[in-house]
Length: 88
Image (cartoon, rainbow, N blue to C red):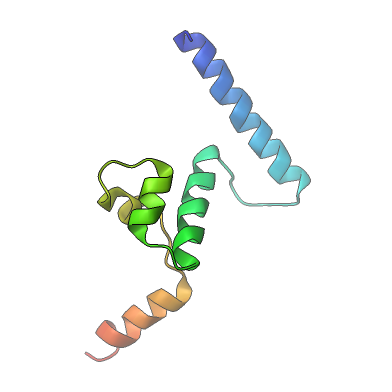
């Protein structure tokens, strides 16, 4: 594919995703990479490791997944607060 064709394809994907989100009633910013982030987060929330999520996403360096793709959730953040911040 040429660079121009690739750019057109990327815009089409982005536009399609935005249209689907709008029709579904979503009022948040939606973009293609959000699906990768959501998939990695769901793998971890359902008991999978960050390594498993990284392997599924095709990451070579495993630490990329934990830093950039997974969101641990509010309960995890609360646990960090109670364990490390509140005690001070």
